[in-house]
Length: 132
Image 1 (cartoon, rainbow, N blue to C red):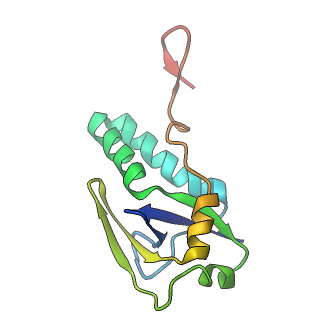
Image 2: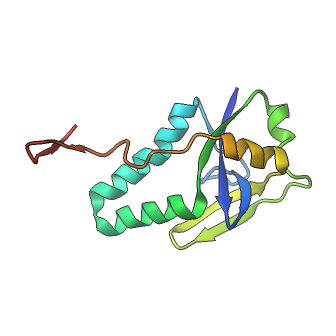
């Protein structure tokens, strides 16, 4: 299985490319690791302060990440538009690189797993103290 992130930006769906090397697909060892990638980033921003927390929220709203699993590289290829072009996807919270996907990719995005932004945050307790 191949685990990747699909982003929905301004109504179009893209395969997320690696931040450091946009010529590479951003892949994850399993779907949970992909979810944690986004959940941990939000938790780190939240702990830094209000502005960072809001920026992470805006990112989630603007880019709508979903973790999707494909059976093989061949099934992933069938979900990508040809010819392949890498696009810079810009939003108020930053930018990502992505490759447009076709109907198969859009259908996969709809079935994808959505990161839970509050998953990594300390939970409120009845005694008013913060903690897990």
